Structure formats: structure tokens, C-alpha cells
Length: 139
Image (cartoon, rainbow, N blue to C red; front, side, top):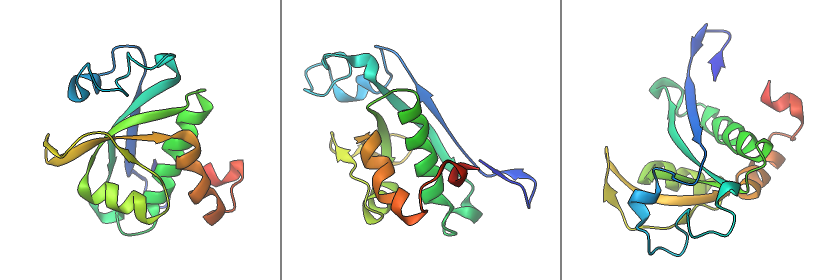
């Protein structure tokens, strides 16, 4: 995400694809929602490196970055994505109406977080109505 007015990059995320998602190591192979146990594992991805510069975190930009991540996952034809979330982010995502299904207990991993799963529809629906969803919303 780039702030044109300030001329700086302010946020980012990456999407990992494939059968051997890194998140699988955190879930344990016996977990019912482990990426390799889902019938069509290629229909899901992993969002990682989700980050927003601190000075932009309380400005309303976070929902836009969540929307963009959800839109990207959806436009790639994925049903949803796994994500390790710190408690703050999970609480915020829930507060804006996005259903993040918690799959693990808290664990220490560059801070305290848990593995969650968010479907593409869950990521887009609550936010879309707030921004009068149009393709131009992503510009």
C-alpha cells in the first residue's frame, strides 16, 4: 500500500500458495483444518507479513489493507487464507465484523498470536458495505 500524498509505502502483505504452507507446521498434521487435509488444499493460501506502519494504524487505513488482502485472495480464486494474528489484530478484525476463525491457542511467535482462518467472503462482506464497494475503492 502506498500513500501518494506522503510518497511512502505504508503497508504490505504477501500471499503464500501451495500444498506445503508454512502455517501447517503450527497447526499440527492431525488438525482437521490442516492445509493438506482439506480436500482441495490449493483453494486456500496463507497471508503473511501483514504489516502497516505504526503512524497509520489508527487512521482507518487498517480496514482498507484488510479489504485489499481479502480482495487479492478472492481474485486469485482462493476460498480463504490462514493467518497468524496477534491478539490486537484479531480483536480489531472482529470489531469491524470480519469473522476470523481461531484454529489454535495463543503461542509465542514474534509476539503472542494464534493461527486463524478467514474466508474470502468474510474478509470482503462487512468492509465492502462501509466503503460502498466498487473496484475504484482499491485505487
